[in-house]
Amino acid sequence: MMSDKLSWMAVFASLAVLSALGVVFGYAPVEASMGIVQKIFYFHVSSALAAYTGFFLCCGASIYYLLKGDRRADVVARAGAEVGVLFCTFVLISGPLWARKAWGTWWTGEPRLMLTMVAALIFYAYVVVRSIGGRTEITRRICAALAILGVADIPLVHFAVQKWRGNHPRVLRNGGISDEMEVALTAAMLAVFSLFATLVLLRIRVGMAEEKVERLHRLATARGNDIEDRRRSPLLENP
Amino acid sequence: MKRLLCLVAAVAVLSAFEAAPAAAEGSGAAPAAYSADRLSKEGFVPAAPGQAVEDSVPGGLLMLTAYGVLWTLVGGYLWRLSRRTAATQRDLDALGQRLDDLNARLKQG
Amino acid sequence: MSVPRRTPTLAQQVWLLLQKDLRVEMRTGEVVATSLLFSAVLVSLFVFAGFSTRKAASEGAPGLLWMASAFVAVLVVTRTFEREREDGAVTALLLIPGASTALFFAKLVYNWLLLTLVQGVLLLLVGGVFSVDWFAHGYAVAVALLLGGFGLCAVGTTLAALLAAMRLREVIVPVVLFPLCVPLLIAGAQASVAAIRGQNSGAWMVTILLFDLLFVGLGQWLFGLALEGAGGGEGDSE
Image 1 (cartoon, each protein chain N blue to C red):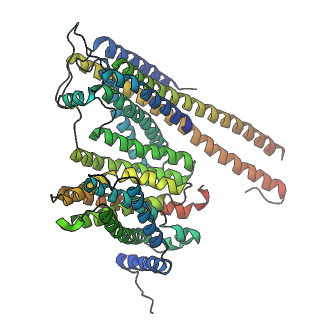
Image 2 (spheres, rainbow over the protein chains, first blue to last red):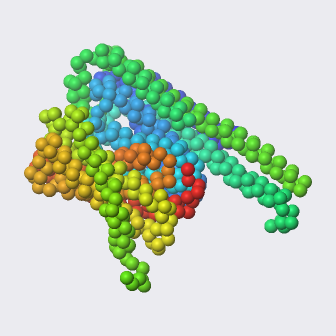
Image 3 (cartoon, rainbow over the protein chains, first blue to last red):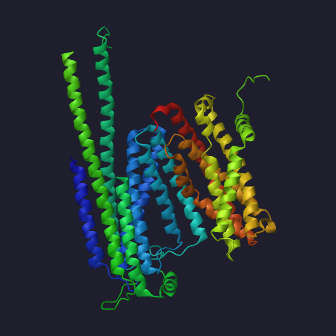
């Protein structure tokens, strides 16, 4: 079923994930005041980046689809949105789990948390519209438009929530991270992004196969009608 | 399939809240002061070897839940994709059968 | 009346389409009446839910005002194409050359006028129930409502056009509209809070204005695409 390239990709992703887990739990030190819960951080941050990558991929492919009408771009957009939503869900669940220990509360009105929440809501709506609308041209256009509106909204939401309030630990920008932790973060990034790429490519493959089947269905129906017509009126010449 | 994903997410969220009462009992009135201290601080500090790490909230459980959620989500998505692939394959087989029939009839007629 | 030879300008087209909708609305008064009633019910719900007895009402009132605006906006925009859909007039309107831009602005301004009317009443209701004097510190709240209402309608009109042929439209429009309007709601509520406290709300106004510009631009583009799709392939929807 799977082509060689994609299965190699999957093997690589699995190895990357396993070794990242090894580095995170075996090599990186336990954080002094938060304890072991800080180990969420490595996959949390990488997944957030992967989620936004998925959303931007979806937006780019959607613009291309609206301009050129290429169905393959639509398949790519759908893959980006679905995998993005997957990682975004993880970020939204692991964030509060970490915050419970680190900040003493499940949820704070923290800018990046709120931004991710809004982005997730928009793309959840995207996925829901996809499934309600079915495989029609109008649904494809609606979803492309939603992706564009949603991604265009992200900078504005970011600006508004930043201006409103802010207290996320700015770990990466201030260099407040030890060398071992940095190695673990790099490993987690590599793992999450190879997992992301594998899932997106797999989803694209499935989507392309579905497109192909649909095209063949139309072909078969047209041919069937053709034969029926000829059988009913033998005088009709072959076109 | 969407329903399945929602279900998985719901179970994950519920299990996270399941852990909440236990966590709350352990910490008592600490959270407010604790969070204020935390908020003013930037960066992570590695614990010295052998240093006892304060553990008023069961961090290990929270962390295990988080990683459990990640692998459940990925596994659920893969399962869903495999279902879709199987459905597409069935479609394709039916279609091939139908095209063969049509071709046979074309030759006859 | 003589028929003009040349194609009317965009402004003329917008005005003609707007007149048509306003005339229908003035004859029936359906949307205005139901929206006003809805906003009265909404404010009374806030009262019964216990918001008006809180000490912090002057902080909460702007938030409620903007939330109510968002709810009313949904009510107004989901009906944007109701009449056209009933008698299949969207395709006819699109036969006019360059009509999609004119149609977008006509519908946008029409929705905005209705929303502004209801927002005016909401301002009085919320101000009365929560004892807030909106105009004690100038007209910043009114300006924010006008600008913010325009943004709400820009997104809402676009979504109404996009989702016109969609099943479960009434649920999906708010589900998409509210997250998209989060920056607008934050900026609007904060601008109002600042105005009540007598502080400068300029930065929030700029945010609202940016939102308006972005979504009028994008909306105008996507509106055309959506209607082309609806006009071309009405059969394949649902």
